[in-house]
Length: 358
Image (cartoon, rainbow, N blue to C red):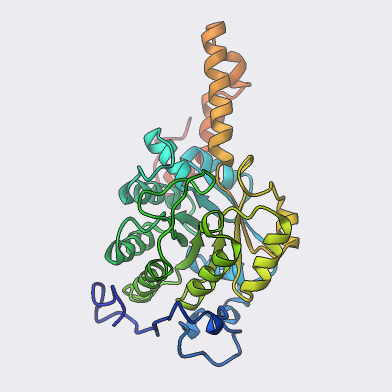
């Protein structure tokens, strides 16, 4: 029995095939098979998650199912990084159909601290519960760092994320005292430990009571430590262990992204763009042309918040008023962005009169 399965086994659990992978047999690792090919015995396969099952029909109200539909259908999935309720509301107002809960942004917004393995699972889950509740059908992809511990903690993280409404998460191969993927000095665990984390996440998802379409994303930070060849190989191992999407952090050129996508076909590839980071500032169109299926902009909201709030505070300190930084936005206009009309409409439909005038 694979590690972690008995921890969450229940009468409602499904027995999805999960098999061992020999990390030494590099010549046998080819990534996930095409959906119409027979499953290899050393590769995870669950026919329920075949992309063909998500090609037709209206977009689901279930966020995880909707994310799978977006992955199966044409077009790149664009997920702006959010750091709190305000940034999530702004992303929804702008019309994005997916959001990304960045670990760095969560650590900064909740704790005022850098992304150096300081935030806990509870910090991430509490943030996700709030964000996912704002638009339950909009998929949120959440950072899960290293899974916050061993296989039992990885499985617990999956369960907590699913219950919070998260559509998918990525789990990485850094050591527990991890850091932002765009900082130097990273260290990674062995191939075997990385695959064990992925496998534990897949087992937990497949044994979730009642079933779940939760998306497991395998992320490697090994490119800057061990080279691109090793990074791609680790993602092939992750794909064979059941990862639905592959995420290679710190791809430094367009050519490397394109070759990575080719090497990992047919698995979709996620690229992380941070202005000034290790990865070039690909536009969404450029990333799509290079074959990426998901593009996340991890720090778009928190960096903008720092610039905006810093300028407002400096202006207030200098002038003694916030008039200029408000830019004409009165309280009601602010609350409109925060969903004022949704609350007013709900109260009216329920027969209430508390907000007849606001």
